[in-house]
Image (cartoon, rainbow, N blue to C red; front, side):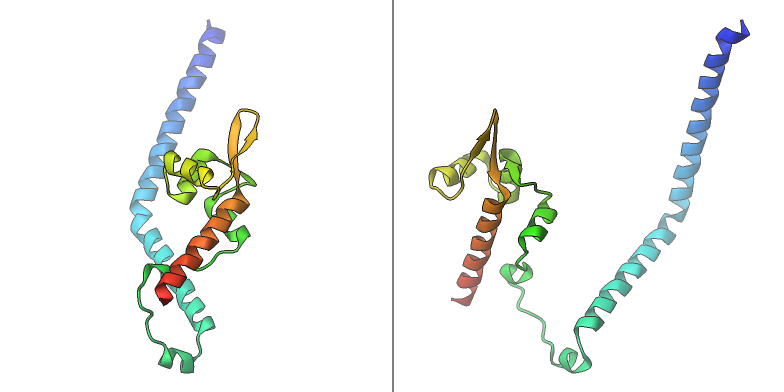
Length: 151
């Protein structure tokens, strides 16, 4: 009889222990949330302050003027590696993921394909677009926005 009950008792004890542990962790997280958030905010502020100080001497900060807040001025040109890392892209990008990167729907994506702006590559049943093509379109859009800003 004990051999039959033992696994059930051990399982119920393990579940009870896990629940208590989970409750203790949640309680600790709740009680230390403000302190942890303040520490993270302070670390982030110190990091930004250090980046600013490293990039600007006293002379240049005295002459610094805030930029005109044009949307295109807020976007810096990424390298191909940075672009792929930012959007978590591999060499071939599925069409739905490409829609998210391009910020368009499937219909518009297929219009780009029809117009020759993008090319679809078939791999068995899967259709994909190369990350390089998406990056090239990103660069073209940045250059176009910079050109319209200069005009």
